[in-house]
Length: 123
Image 1 (cartoon, one colour):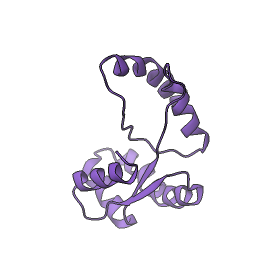
Image 2 (cartoon, helix red, strand yellow):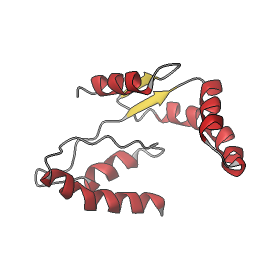
Image 3 (tube, helix red, strand yellow):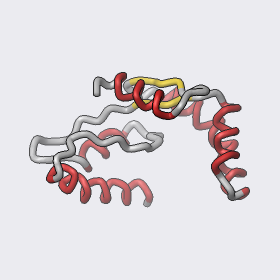
């Protein structure tokens, strides 16, 4: 449900962004299925065809990811789900290897990691 809602929303928003002159979008999203890249490319399709989609996986050590979750989340229920999930998801994403680049976000300001991610895909 959430995935189809996201694709519908992207398809509706893409023409608006193009009319306003935006040709590049950064979508912070975890892709857990290789088909997600194609789904996004089709959702963002325009007059020139399907969109080019680049995937950058942002990494950090498990301890750092857990500390970030604990700093930002206020719901214990959410933390009880998210903490074990971040451990298993990192291994799953590494095994999937659907990314074009990987950026290590360990102990860095978000701006530095973002700049490296954009550089990695040639933006």
